[in-house]
Amino acid sequence: MYIYERKAHYHETDQMGVIHHSNYLRYMEEARIELLDSVNLNYKHLEEIGIISPIVSVNVEYKKPIRFDDIMQIKLWVSKYTGVSFEIEYEIVNKETQELCIKAHSKSCFVKNNRVVSIKKECPDIDNTLRENIG
Image (cartoon, rainbow, N blue to C red):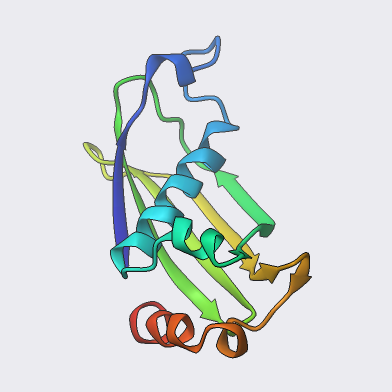
């Protein structure tokens, strides 16, 4: 499990004073990139070699609001890795109260030249890194 911490900013709130629901997808993206960095798999490097990893599905359950100035912990882990795709589970909690605020799931695939590819075949070294660290 990887934990990414982030403070809620004022400009991210809605008229009700809570973080607007669309921002959680951005937070999940930040955490996903940090997770990859934590296992020495830089997303910019992937792009430089022609590999991208788009989100193909996402599901978010909003349990409790996060408000301006709250510090959230985004706990995430890879629940499935096939070499062609991977799935991540997310739990966003309020750091102070440890209340579960968001529960989410995303699925990504690997794409090169607009085609889904097996990272195991395209880049075995990257596949090994993923399998050893998060797969």
